[in-house]
Length: 232
Length: 332
Image (tube, rainbow over the protein chains, first blue to last red):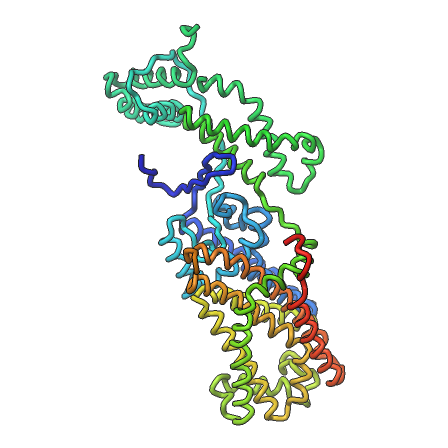
């Protein structure tokens, strides 16, 4: 089976399981960057009243500008895994093995922002994210980091109870998973759509309409819960 | 085993694991973790490995995609906790400056000397050229900037090294300015290395020429008596640190031009790890240089003392970079 055409990048952990990292494309990243730019601009504005303190205030303000310019992303990435802008779009920065980003990698990717910005407005970074399979900009390539979606919310996935019915012979594991997936997600679909999908699965046995839905739920119950009372 | 039996058998473990995860994720401030979970946390690695096993089973037994993705999510969250790198600041920063930084620099001594040459050769050349001919400086620096420069180091200027409009600024304000400007240059000369090393080379050459031109021109105008004592104190750290930042950039360029036995991407990654150490060390040196420049260089100490401090700075810096971190290899 060829790998699915998707932006998920698989990575084997030391425990021997494959973790899927869903890398984020240029558009959400650009929006997160825009939000971060706005936040940073607001912080710069918030620092200007320091000028009222004359010389010392000016020094503090310049130091603040320096920190905001270079260390704003590093600070947030190392502490929480993402800048406020990235958090707002559900993004996280991770090493390419999926672990949370550390200080060295975060420094590399954020100092190299200067080059990604060239020739103007992240031109080089955009080209790099479009060319690279994992949407990495130049700083990410050098630092070995990825920007991924922080997946998370657990969905309702109870398989509705129904009388278990044995599967027709010859259904491969792909089809079995499709049946289970249908049963889990069916509740979130309209009745018409449920019927339409169930009829694809019951094409062999030939049920139509709601009968098909009931048949597929029966199969799903057989798969997930076993034959039920009839089994010893 | 059917999916339902599997789920009922393991729900208790998953719930416990989920609670520990929430403690770990939410308790970065450490409050909740101290209360009840501190004993339980010992079980976390075990539970994590168990859940990994459950996830692998769910995939291979063809359990429902929903269950697999839930378990995948649990594994992913645990993985982030188990393999998190915890940044600690003070102690590592000290050992870093005491040994890692000079060691890393010595490992890339050739590039360091190349960067020093890129900085100092044009400095010397432009210095001699502008000293010999008063017109040469205008080929590099605009006339208005030259005028500002002359005003800054005019012996009649009560605060040498500061422009007319900066006379009123306090030392601390100048410190902020030096940090922003100099560390920024250091960071840029590192980043510029990603353009096949050309960006770093350009920044080194440009800054070398600029400093050389200014020094030569001011000496020619007999402003040397204010210029040289002013720069003597911080020059060792500042110039060397800029060269080190440039060397870090050249290290990135080297990965792209001469990757050796690796692919270019792999070489870039490996070299970037060393380069960022050099940049970190260089920026701490630039911070030191900014302290010296803001609070000492413009101070009232007589010129011989300032020259003495400058010479001592070069000697100490040389000793530090050649000797620090030799011998014992603990913590490397």
